[in-house]
Image 1: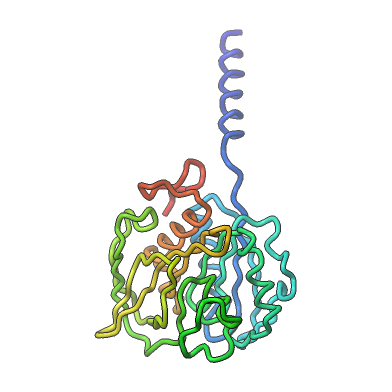
Image 2 (image 1 turned 180 degrees about the vertical axis):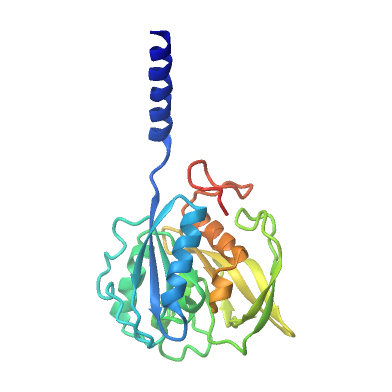
Length: 269
């Protein structure tokens, strides 16, 4: 009888712990478009990030390799309903319709956190975007969301990544590193709400490569990095660790010491 009671109590405790474990956060990963091996990278990101975090990633992908990828959520401003965060990893520089771009931004304007990787910074732009776009301009809405305006990049060369704010929760525990051959995106302007976390250097060229932004009236948390052109970089533990930290910060699930809020890290990186 005593053994039975102990077994019941042990089983009850196990169920109680299970009930206390948070459900995986729902994350949408958008990939597709020009100039990158998104077919491979979407799986690298899903596997690498789900291994590190208590998240469940849903892939929204097209194999279309043009600057106008026919992503299924275009024209659907409610596309992020039911998701805790959206990762924009698409390359859609040819999508210039104002209403379509407003629809892409709508969830984030309403408060859905976001992460932007690499070519997302060069998407949804139109007009004279090669010049500095003023805040409030119709063709500046994507840049306002990103928190930084970039117009292009130079040749692929290794980038020396230096974390300039080592006390931020995202960068705690991360070390400076040098990538393989990668693209260093330029900075035309860095907006007031953006907070620079890391800079990258190729020879004499230097630019912001990792930063956060508080977007819109709801101060939506947005994390971005321009790094991530090649598959080897995307699969690099240092890159995946950085993106994972950015996700946690955007979701407000990151403690000040750089650790995940209990229940949101798989501790398997």
